[in-house]
Length: 125
Picture (cartoon, rainbow, N blue to C red):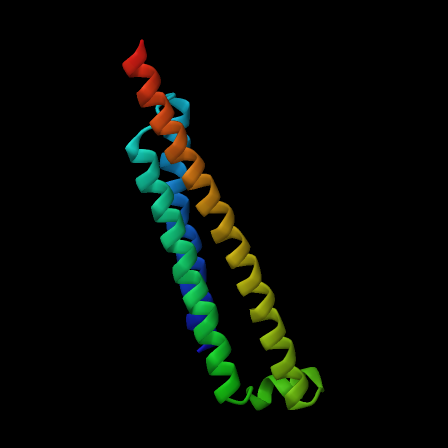
């Protein structure tokens, strides 16, 4: 289960690189202030949201399931401390994803305002 979750999280990250690449291409062409840039920014937000859902599902699975005895025996620690470490790591990951989502929402709103101002300036000129 953890392997599948890890693979899906890496896949979300790699899929998010596609919109990032497209945004960098738009910036190189000096066409970043367009509606296309907002669409690619929404793609990055969707990938981060999917990753947050995966982390939440992993946390819920960890709460309901007990960690594998192989992990506990290999680490030489108690079962509850392994659960605490995994839940703590998931909580930190969830907070980092939430911070990234908020930053991207602010950046998207700034991009939309810049697009509106560019359109107004083009109408004046």
